Image (cartoon, rainbow, N blue to C red; front, side):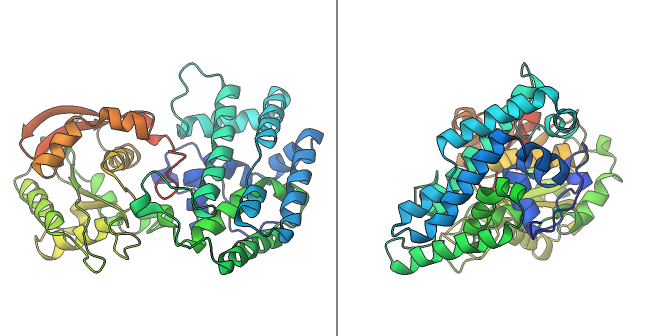
Length: 406
């Protein structure tokens, strides 16, 4: 069996409350490749699916290619051995489509867990089978994306903050990739585990690049956000004009700087609004982003400032330590509002610098370009530095080309 602590059952309640992911690897896999994670946690279904001749033949050939990659003399050779090929992805998709017609366990998985999660978008006009195929195809392509970026040094969406950590021209790097290959092969003990080879290669590549950001500080609801989460159920939201206040960060410009001057000023704005009674909760949002490979998590440093300098109580502060851009500041906060049980009939507010709020007002096109949807609805601008918003369920959709914050 795979040497992973992934023996969990995923209910169809929201992630924030059912806590399906138990280990760091769970969080990496589940956030990026939720459909694959569901198969990983259902070994009997995976075994049944992978024993069909169509899938078995693909996995056998794919395993042989990885096994033979020990002879690779170039980085590109290993990258191609790591990735799913186009014919393999087409074959897997076709085999799943055929299996779905008769496999009741697969049908149940899709209807009870995959579709309700909304992790591959809202179902809308898609059939259950089409939703499954969309999820599987997205997962396989997303795995290839990570291999291209964090093994092959392809430029990510934001090269200045998310690029590979290595000089791939060095001989030592080729040796490192071969060690990654060997490590994953050691975890493949039985034939149906071969379905997860590429996924495990992706997890290892993120790890050696020190890019497990998607899992940092998880589970938030039991750790950094525990006090505030428990306070939500005790809060009379009718007493407040808004449900929460999202404070946008400003990344430091120096490697050894924990919080920027802009971050401090925005925290002061947030504290002022909190003590004026605008909202009972503050969300500070920002990951380990600026500058490249910074050791500081922006949301954590802003939370410290709010508590120690501004005297905001910890039970009023929620953090999102994963967002890397303004688009995902709003998307991740929308997820928090949905998953943590905030009232759906109230607006929340965003505060930041004037120029930043100006940009938020015009950000819908950027969201569509980068995320494929707009995860929020804006309301009115109530001051030069504050604007209203509400979450949309589209925010639960995985972003396949942002593995550090999917």
